[in-house]
Amino acid sequence: MPQNWKTYKLGDLIEVNCNSLRKGGIEWINYVDIKSVGTGLYEEPKILMFKDAPSRARRILQEGDTVISSVRPNLKSFFYSQNLRENTVASTGFAVLTPKNIDSRYLYYLTTNDSYTDFLVKSCTGSAYPAFGPNVLINSKVTIPESLQEQRAIASILSALDDKIELNLQMNKTLEEMAMALYKHWFVDFGPFQNGEFVESELGMIPKGWEVKPIGDLIETLGGGTPKTAINEYWEKGTIDWYSPTDLTKANSLYSLGSAKKITSLGLQKSSSKIFPKGSLLMSSRATIGAITINRKEACTNQGFITMIPNDILSLYQLHGWTVNNMDLIISKSNGSTFKEISKANFRNLPIIVGLDVQPYLDKSKNIYSQIENNILENQTLTTLRDTLLPKLISGEVRVKDAEKILTTAL
Image (cartoon, rainbow, N blue to C red; front, top):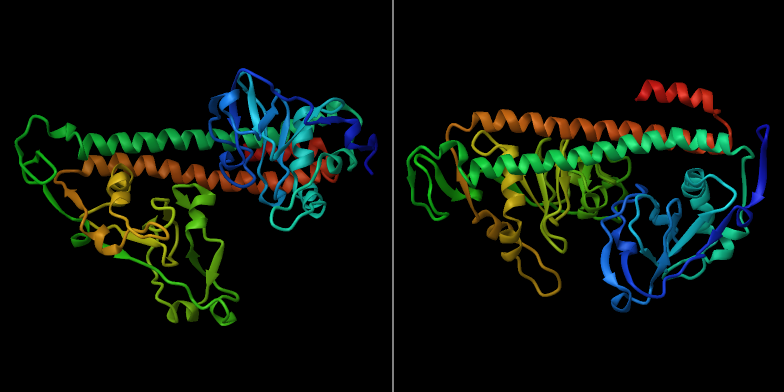
């Protein structure tokens, strides 16, 4: 044990689920609102009156609370309460940890690191929905610095990394909005051509010389397939990214850093999956229709995708803008009784505009999309550093001064 560190029962340092709401209006954070695994980020709360809220909307939050899902903690659904509005409430599926004798931010890192998460997973009961109760938290033993100053120093290092990651995510949100505004300016409002001649088309008036064609006549669109899961040779030591829609919904990222599962060359040969080049646009086409990402290296998918291969006629940037802008139309062309799916045939018949003199659009778009990709890559580096430092700082293996030097280099 490091010098000046001490072991406590967590219950001596915190209160669990100590506040509950009885009336008034609330802003409710549900389990499904967590943005992605392990990020500590959540969607905007839903605004409801207490009388209209589900019975599980009862855990009122305070600034500095740590909120951890008590159901299936292996999914790492947790967040730190900050910048709250009055009467922000979490579902009873969460455990709310309110600090008493411990720094609030340090508490967050202490109870959401992989080691503590593993402890919570092992403490769960129930098979369908494994969960832990408040006493698991209260009776757990933790070893921490006695000094609040040292706790805060450790938390500030980790917070600096998290804050930079969040800043990059916010920047990318703004950049994606800029990309869509640019697309609409060129291909919906035809802003640069307002002083020119327009002609009729099936999509309305378009600049003279432009055309409307089925997207399938202009680009290659690919489906996918799944190698037999029982044959190890198709999967073991696989090196080819093989995407399922879950990869997209979990990452929620415009550029993909890779797939969870990979297949071998033999698996590719023995399935209907097809390899496609980096810089293609992947769109999930069934169940959850419309999850999108851009692959950064050659890849293939399962059968739940339509993958668009850009070319000199339709750029990646226009394809992305068109897909996002026309998502309601795409979904409207889906069918199916068990789950909705848009077929490649229906998708290929959808109309898209082919423009002339669009090089300024391509140049501006390239700059925007490059910034988005660079921010995603930087976040990958920062997340790796954070995940490496967190358990070592929390355990005292790495001390604050050494971590500060590493942080200075990284930021």
